Length: 101
Image (cartoon, rainbow, N blue to C red; front, side, top):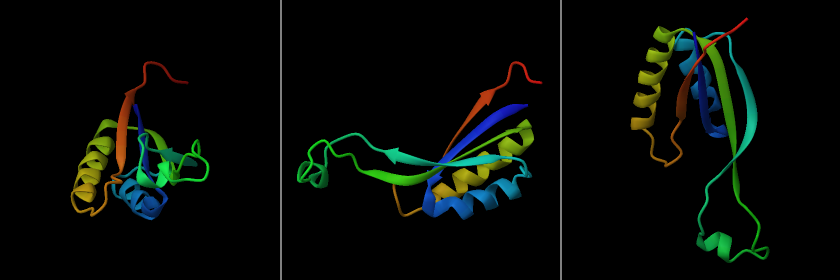
């Protein structure tokens, strides 16, 4: 068993849910998060409030699942990302679980 963590912009929430379903991952949790990118942009430097940070509404999904489900999910995410016309790709990581109850 491993922990898979997936992040995406809110716009892709339904797509990620479909990817989880197709990967046979039916038990998972999700949370709203704010995504930030560091760096100065014209918008940030021209802001009335110089210290203001601009964020994207994002989602975090996580699930404890089996390797074969994760393999399918990663392949599906790679395929999904290859068709995007944006720089906001779906991101995923896997964390091994040493112990669980």
